[in-house]
Amino acid sequence: MAPTANKALNGHKLLVLLGVTGPPKILLGTTFQPEWIAELKELFSGLEIITVEGCIWNTPAFEEKFPEKEWKDVTILVTGNALPAAHIAPKLEYVQIQSAGANHILQNPLFSDTDVALCTASGVHGPQIAEWVVTTFLAFQHQIPQYIDFQRQKTWHKLDDPVHDAVGQRVGILGYGAVGRQIARVVKALGMDIHACNLHPRLTPESRKDETYTPAGLGDPEGAFPSKWFSAENTEGLHEFLGSGLDLLVITIPLTEKSRGIISMRELALLAKKKAFVSNIGRGEVVVTDDLIDALEEGTIRGAALDVTDPEPLPDGHRLWGTKNLFISPHVSGNSSSYARRVFEVLKYNLIRMSEGKELTNKVDKSKGY
Image (cartoon, rainbow, N blue to C red):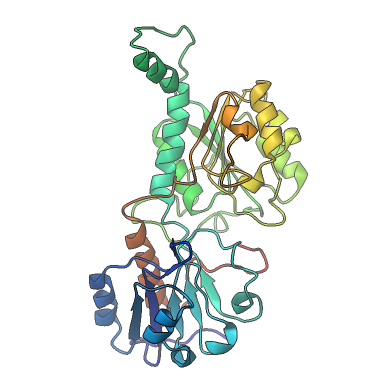
């Protein structure tokens, strides 16, 4: 049944978990500012807003601030990973989480056994992740790590290897969603050619559009930047994409059963023609780690930058730490002082859509896992 308009959101109750943590002090809620909550109250006169602040999830302190009986009227929840049991929140319609991926909570009965809409924060990471991808790629191209080493050694030394600037190079973006589209916008400005590949075909101009949240003026909502589109729906399509002469492969696809291990030695070998640089900001398990190490050590690919690894966190002594031509960061590419504000913008946009009787944005397709 199609949603119905409700301009003031009468009858809705929004619960925002502010600074709610779980052991060992992991943030399970969000960090919205009080003035943002006030903005929602001004926009939606019929919306009841409850905030629970500064306590540990599922403890007497939390129960004291928000007794279990109060869950029965909650229709909208803003949270990190803290989720109620389905039976205590029977009216819940929409959950807004803080992460771009949802694979870590999709099997929770609150979603697997109900019709509750789960919306991610996809798109809030786009600007900062695009900067991370381009920074690490250009640093490698311009031999910045080596020159930092020379500086530490107080050595004035020029490398003989030629610098290949970005103009005319080709980037393949595996996962052309909100993050991938912002990466495309940035590399397009550098003069790079863009190939896009998704897990499902995008055969028409209409299908190549994207309504996922994107900060104003950013991304590629029309799907206009790629010169060529591919589909990784089957192995042949993925291999056609990887064999299309890529200088840079950026992996942004979500982790699903279909995408787990999708990049192995066979796929990395297809990048050997131009010895592509590989950047993974999606999920570590999408790439077979040992195969990536071998491809780097053998020179199949020129280098790699990983913000995600398998395993994660990466343990002391793991082979990746000593692999040549590799940059590793501890899953921080999405960090930004603007993160929480952008999550709030997703929530506000979705509340507006809900009030107008429209479908929510960033809504997870439970059958696909993203």
